[in-house]
Length: 88
Image 1 (cartoon, rainbow, N blue to C red):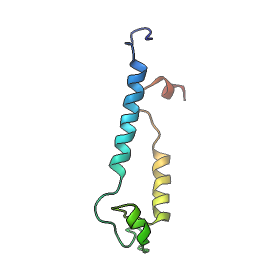
Image 2: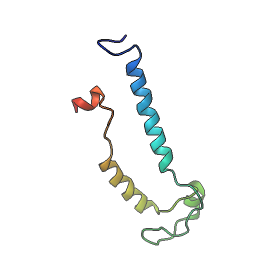
Image 3: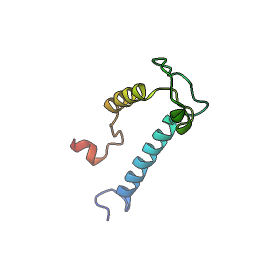
Image 4: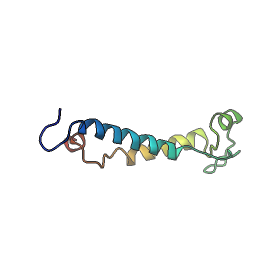
């Protein structure tokens, strides 16, 4: 049920668009190509199990964890202007 100027299904369209954006972002951040033997940040050896599990891996676990934490602090902004983002 739509209200005001919005069409029927507008809320679901917004949810679908947000999910598609998140999936696209996650896919773009996946490593690809050949894995490195040594971490490109700290030069420690990347274990063979990690290289096998994640093709194209470039960072060791501690460096990847640090990078993930930095990206998490920068992200989490809904730029579509949904009602939820306006209430925060």
